[in-house]
Image (tube, rainbow, N blue to C red; front, top):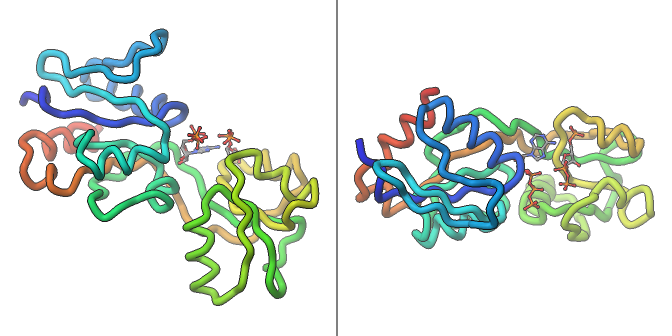
Length: 205
Ligand code: ATP
Ligand code: PRP
């Protein structure tokens, strides 16, 4: 099967490392040269091309059809997805959880402030629970927020729990279980040859 017309958008960092080992397990050659500054690796022979982008931009690139497929954490997908994107496989790596954490194990009493980079996920979660919250958007280092008095609670990613423990924070509730997902442009998925076949190659390893 030729995947020559297919472009996959992949985020740097953990998702790229996991994607690279997935690629190797499938026998597909990994086209990315990590030593170069290049961000677009065009399809070679029968193999798909790869675009490298920021995680939060992957749903936009796939939704607009710039890439046919994308690999992104479910956390990012829930936060930044759009109606032109379909989730087509759970790739079973980059496992983590989006949790509410604070300085004790108790659910907040009354209106409270929450620091997070997941504004949509946090807003939706607390709306469902009819609990008023003020969301403070930070891009990283969330665990600092309670320590410096910015917000008593955070919504952030947890894997081993080490980062929370180091900041004397306690997990209160899991909001979302996440892993890497393969996403597709909705109309390309219906019309473009090879996408389902590439999904099977990536999903079956
Ligand atoms: P950016 O640098 O663009 O802000 P990021 O810091 O979220 O992105 P990574 O830390 O590489 O990028 O995380 C990529 C994805 O891996 C996340 O969206 C999440 O799904 C998952 N992830 C994040 N932290 C962990 C972790 N500690 N353990 C396992 N998976 C994680
Ligand atoms: C992520 C996340 C937490 C940490 C959780 O940070 O934001 O801080 O991992 O993992 P743990 O439960 O295993 O300690 P990352 O290492 O990606 O750094 P970041 O602050 O740049 O996102």
